[in-house]
Length: 196
Image (cartoon, rainbow, N blue to C red; front, side):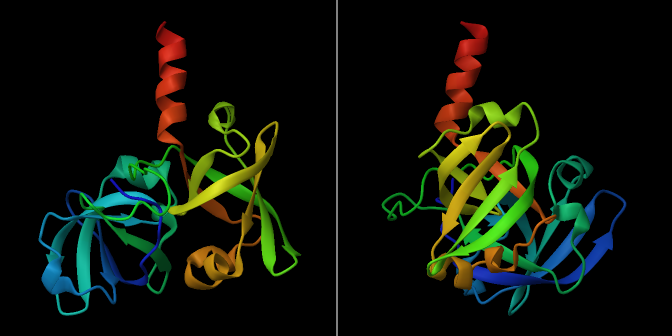
């Protein structure tokens, strides 16, 4: 489990296809002496398992399914990545409960300044748009955000200057594809309605 509060922007330092999956090495400022092999770390909202580590980097292996269902298939050397370590019991829950399971990939349709903040609109693939509600929670590239408005398959969020500056969201432009995870409560409520 995660909270959608980004604690480092890592950088892809190596990409290699193996006989099993695709392997990424990620540079980080995390204290890796406190990260075990097998630990879960969210990468742009996608939960991945640490399989190897060095002094300032760790490696993850990504399946074809994950590459097809997220933006990770586009990653190349130098790509910046929002990182979050998994939550521990007793940690502050600053965002919302996030599983690290990407539900779909959206496309940024507009970015505009609004005071000191930025208003970002994202088009959501159907039928995922049904699970996004005004004032509900969503993660975009692993960042916990509050939905401001929803119109058909487009939702809007407001990024305060801090979020704009300390995550990869400050590089958003129209046409950029982003990983999305809907609110966990919405997912289970929708499933209950389908099967009730």
